[in-house]
Image (cartoon, rainbow, N blue to C red):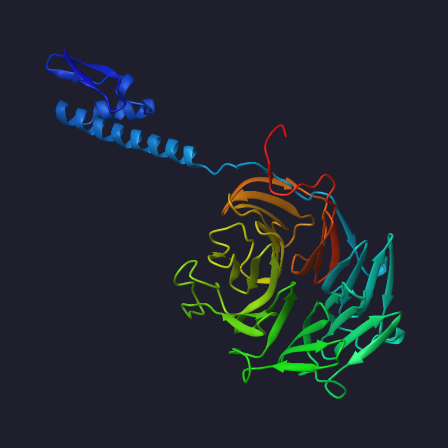
Length: 425
């Protein structure tokens, strides 16, 4: 009798009968046919034992790897809020067009810019304006509301700027103002100043003095002059430049600062978190002193000291092609992508909730909850938008609104909470 210890630490016995070792099934976690195969092999008994040991080692390694993988499986640090209740709106409900370009909350009112006009949703009813109603141009690509005056400013794709005040539209274009170009993608209001992102640079208009300023590559660090989006805070203005990264305007010093992709690579992100993830920037959002910037190649977060980049292969983003982003806090942002809505719910734990159709043929959207790129759980929703190419989004209280290429939807935030909630809370 010889005693041996298995790789698992169990003490086993190999019996010798007539000089031939007998392989006990207890140490071979194989199928019985495998055991019979080993016994019938035409080889020396010692070789049988060696082969069995090799196979056993392989099985144990596999079991160990499986156990390690199970131990490392992603787990949620807490439960994020998930929008499962949705309402949808189309032309038949009162919209001037189903192609949605812009959404802006104004207290209990909601302004919507479409390919065919402007709409207002208030107290459960829609009102709309087209060119027949005095709207200077039918394609509304951006909306901003002045906190001081309540005036509604509209970015018009090919029509310049419009101000809606007291039921009347005022029209600003290249021929009657200092506007750089009539193709305006975005508009923002900072105190008394209106900012416009155009295809020929950035404009500012002081509504008190009537003074216009144009910023191009001649007087600002613009590598490209095609500006896609603009957002304003109390002390800063940020501009998303298509092919030129992000520009930051300091209201106090009246100086520009540019943020680019440091590695200058168009196809790949060569060095992770070294700066803006890509220079083809589509939107910017600034909240709680944190900048969120969307690009056609991923998402960036900047807290004033450190950059963090996200792409669809290492995060919960459903796609790198991001049309718009809105920060909900310093730790959370929602991204409108060409394959649904992706929400980074908690920055510290990298917890995501992504809303999308799993296939192009699917009728309803699902909500994928995960950590990083790993989906932990999928929940059903009642959202049935036929198009998951999300163009814009907006928060209104606890609700979230999304605009797509074919319809508008509201996620009802009944019971909403920010961040993560622990079981039992």
